[in-house]
Length: 114
Length: 114
Image 1 (cartoon, rainbow over the protein chains, first blue to last red):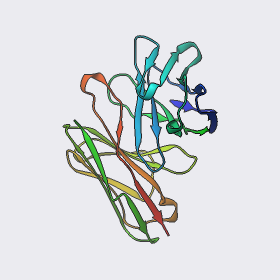
Image 2: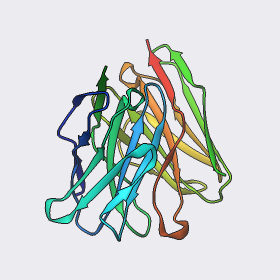
Image 3: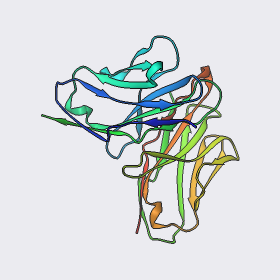
């Protein structure tokens, strides 16, 4: 069965500092990986996705993520955090082709301190 | 471009009352549709998904049901609400066009059962 682990429930980062949110997955085939962001009371917005090719993918809002097959990880990074990045972040995994549902992690809440 | 709508945005209902939440998608044909529930600290729980009109798959047995009367309409219902049904309900769509499988989320409905 597929699963996603986001080991950090909360993370606090100072504005301007770098950010890394961890995501580990378990999947029986080549995975299709996603990061979503959710502001309070809002739906989820897709930040970036990976399904093949370059293992470092760029997303919106200055975010990037690196796929490491050997570590079953897909960590999200940003070099300099802005106060507006405070939100909850979800990692998800699914099948590359054909129909499948996505499995989401439980999320990491990012707090940005001044 | 595609858009997804959910209504109502917020809802307060007494225990034992019925429920109907609606989701519609514009700008795409034959989407896969999903209902998720999000409770605090528990991430996203997939409730139902649909690959076509009248085709509903249930992921979690409970007192909720879903229907898809039209290609781009997805309805979540209950005959009698429980306190445990409170939460944030998200609708999402995806398409296999181009081999992609990412999901796009609506703005959500906040349901409070008293």
